[in-house]
Amino acid sequence: KSKGIIDVSEGKTITGLYLYVKDNKIFKIQKKLIKTFKLIDLSDSYILPGLFDCHAHVFSRLFPTDGSFPDALIRESKLSPEERISSAKHILKNYIDEGFTSVCDLGNSGNFLDADLKHEIKNNDSYPSFYISGPALASGSAQFLKSTPKETIQNEYTLVDDKTDINKLLQTYLDKKIDILKIILNGIYEDDDFK
Image (cartoon, rainbow, N blue to C red; front, side, top):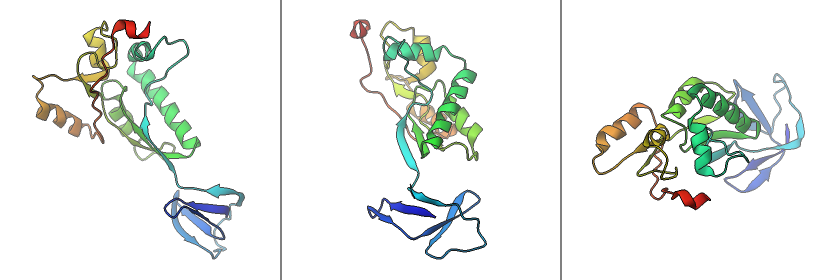
């Protein structure tokens, strides 16, 4: 029982309905109360569909001590995969607490750490549905400063050039069950851009 149900497709609030949940899924919405079900009284609250963050970076954090976004990338890329996955899990649980039932991570997640995490949390209702992009496809220094060592950049991005076998590359992404590709076309920073 709620104060109202937000119907986003019609743009209105519906009142006087009971929402029935079984196995953590809504299976019926109707005006009649079925007495065999436990009543949860949310008459002072509204119910709305789960929210969807379609551009998240759950493997990246920007702290006040980071001088710039490229500095934060370098700091994050030096963390162990276990640390990054643990932090990302915590961030995803916060999403659930805030009403987001779906999150699309768009890169800066190391070398397919997002795919590892997606596999690890599969079928776990304490996390939102998790959609992933794998390492963003980029050229040059991607979103790092130009002076960043190539090995560091390759830990975060898939660097492509005119010699890249695109079919083979995309097969790797398909094998990892990537949901969406992120391509960075203009992310090259000069070192003095952030001074």
